[in-house]
Length: 134
Image (tube, rainbow, N blue to C red; front, side):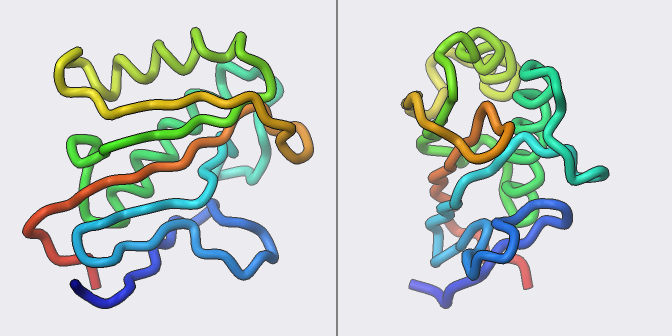
């Protein structure tokens, strides 16, 4: 097993909380909650569809910062304020994981998210035979 590598993405994080966005430990990548914040403005979009689109962009940015891509994702867990967001999630899900027989596991839970946030996701990935970025 390797040493712990904390994953950073500019514009994403947990505010003042002392919690890393993601951690790579050997081949395992796990994240805390990844939001649909616009990384350029720091704001959650008014439109929940835009928020979901940002969330998937942010997931891709976290994966890249960890030295990987969506092909290594084993599971994603979504926390939604309302189940109606599943349609928007599904649209981006299929775009990120186009092959039906090569998609990660997924679970969606209704949750009381902070502030105006409508959706948040956690990622679990397995990155074999690749060193964590320095």
